[in-house]
Image (cartoon, rainbow, N blue to C red):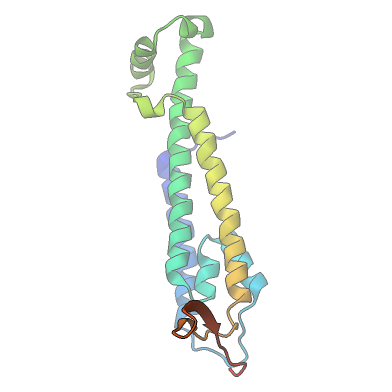
Length: 184
């Protein structure tokens, strides 16, 4: 497995972002076509390619930004804790597993700082478990984002009439009144 530095990962993410921004801006600036229709599969595929793009496709930019931000944050934290895990692993391999298990937590933190130069904090003490947790959250938000874009595209042409909360003074009851028209 190749060892990627933070600089390379940032460069790749920025390159992907710049390439896809061109398509997103071109999509947003084109005039709506009367034959153009929002397709659920298209929304889902767009979200699979780039998180949040499917929501832009169904004209929900705030939701798209939220899903993109969630993905970006969890990928960033995954990479951060993967680096920390690598520091701990490198320290263990350098001093040996026996010596590692005989050390106190304070000694382990000092040894990690001596070997790798990284100062381990309490919140980063179990980096592998935390890294895996961020990976699962990232996968979960990715799948939920695709499914949400699909559902939003399915509901795009659904009538958007009002739902009102009404009261009846005679019987002292509360009810909900739904009304919609089938014209578009």
